[in-house]
Image (tube, rainbow, N blue to C red; front, side, top):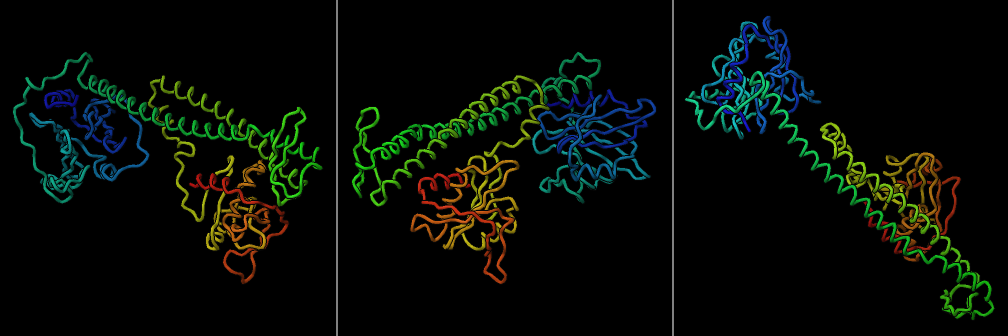
Length: 465
């Protein structure tokens, strides 16, 4: 409930501004500030002013509110030109929600109009004694409220005490009532708004975590039959003599007596097929184990997040809510990558991909460090792929394979579906003197043979930020 003209008049009538000086101005936000006042009679006291909000008011207060981090232009003007002024008069305009202060400082007279109107009419305007506007809290050229213009005085009128009575109050003074009750109203409104924002943040955070959990569960389900690969390898090893040369599949009897159809690569030897099945088994087992572990951690994280927000929302604390809302959402609220090439995530590691010589060169110069891992196709032109180093953590094989597949995908080797790769730390790269843009020679490199996995690349590219 906003203050009416009768209430503003009552607030001002309770205050004594005789021989009162403005010692300081403290801004709280773009709508409010506090005047630190001093007089022989009252000693030091505070006057709070808020305009342009549902809680606009002018009243004496017994507490200094939080100071804003950055001071707006109008407050800077007040501190430079109003601080040190003596208040000659401070009067409410009869029948209107406006207060006019007459100020004197170094033989110069100024007026400060505090307009507690509703809507866009609310404003604080400083003028000289002739009514020329020196500064305004909100500059509104359409209303003539800008520096250099002339203020239009608000005409007095008879207050309508029937339609707009003074609200009942129990505090010793109306100033105390308004300062306490409107402050509580504002706090409750702010608390309600912050809780709603916290609930939205919670829902977004949980949605992100649950999506990750679904993905890890999907991975675990897809690789849950990893033992089948080992069984096929074991059967082929035991009954290799029964496998016809160039066969695409073979029927074998398992150790339990069941008939099993084992699919083969007819272009490969039996031993190569056996090795391929063991490799598939190891890879699938790693993915399954990692997915199960990640899913368990995500389930715990979801539980902790729910408990955190339940505890937070059960408390009536503006400070705690504001602190929570100041934290960015994990990944979901991360800033979009604006650097060269592509950026994506693999098992908690960041991967950067250059797709041409310009992107390769810029990534090397500005976005990588010595311990980051570099991958590039051997004997084929292509993009550079980097795995960003993490302190005290080695790069898992799955991350290396992800990066390697991307290196093949963004190279001339893509058409052939396979390639040999160099990989080494960035600190072991040497630029070629007078070479083309981005050209480097690796030292202390290792080699990796990769058969392009189109599904893996497709999944990776869906995570590009």
